[in-house]
Image (cartoon, rainbow, N blue to C red):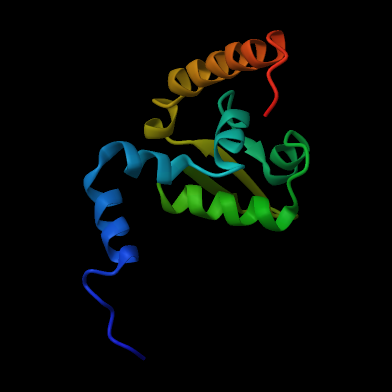
Length: 124
């Protein structure tokens, strides 16, 4: 395998993401599904199927991948209950709960922005 260039764009971007707190945070919760998943878990524990049923358009595979990433990032806690059939619950961690007021403000901003664009008949 080839040597990794220290000054490659990819390495520079990785370094920037690690050093810039805003970029770091956005990378943890960014993407199409992560905030939606976190938002669905804000009211308490849910089983996989309950999370899936509350997010329109997400596939089981994508939900699995996203939940694994969120668990790896310590934003979601996964609890396996020793029973038959097996039961797995997902819930927000304390650090993820700190994000609730932030995404609620993002939601308000999104609503205002949509109204601004649609109210002015602004085209994309």
